[in-house]
Length: 454
Image 1 (cartoon, rainbow, N blue to C red):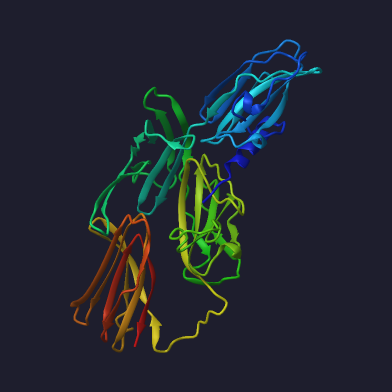
Image 2 (cartoon, rainbow, N blue to C red):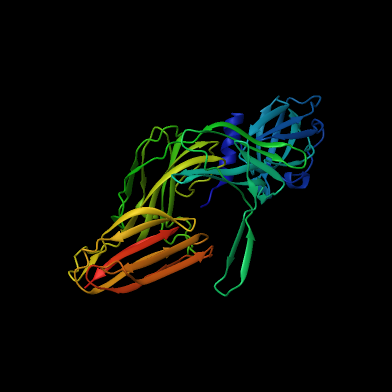
């Protein structure tokens, strides 16, 4: 997903200052040359940052009737990025900016004769914490990255309700070629299973070297999990259809993020970042959204809604889905299928979908979603084929077991993909006899459907 932060920052400046404008710059040579004689002397500029606020102040200049603030984003992209704000007779200004914002800033004094040269040029950044606390029926976890500009830093201590998040969880796995790999992720992580819906959260982040507080947010309530009403599970949707989404209101939610992800959206390079991905933020008073058909593609799809609270900087448009800094969320999702216009639902009388019951079970420390077919369904010898999608960057596991009428297991299939960079689909098949029971389970893997042919 992408976010045009610059437009957001500009909007924040304009709104806060109430005097219009947009962006900083790199130094006197970037901003321009000196002004002619008879103009005021150059002021001296000072810059301080506190959490997400930058405080700009400059010295008073004799004979000046006003001051102009110049700014441009870092890294500097050229003269067109330099913007200005006439701040009148003000000699200081405070602006709230998103975390990660970085700017050059300078000031000129002016009077009826002209403008001064630039003050000293200063560069500042807004360090911050990008954090998501996510809750489901199995517990609550927190994941965060502490950033300074665009770089992750590992010299901070992040806490949620006084629980210190561990930096750099280790991922140990073996490649398909047999090489042992150990990767340290540049994030913070903690299991917060003792927290659930309705609990209050307090997040802090301090620099380890000097204890400076770089983020502090209190009294954020974990919202109740929303429930999707539309689309329904396994719904068939036409390729040219806008897809309405509806969900039940979730207590304590400050807003919702609703959207769609195509099954293979992150599995392949795409020249169009928008195709296969869509997200929309709506206020807590709204419980519906629409995914435009322009963003959906033929294939498997997941529609989801998250109830969010906290320090939400969520900005979305047709081009820009969601980005956030410290969000607490609970989510619900359903799988669906986008089909082409020539899709036919005509039944193949020699084949039928595998009917099954569902439940969850913990196996060797992993929680699996288990499905069992109805043995009465398999009334003639035939073949069962089941599809799975093993997900990327997960401990993705799937298995199948087949039992005869006496309960004897006569078939077993299992596949594990541990933190692979690409997802992969599998379609194992097996021969079945009358009364066979098929049991299959998935952990962080997608069930693509099962077919009984005879």
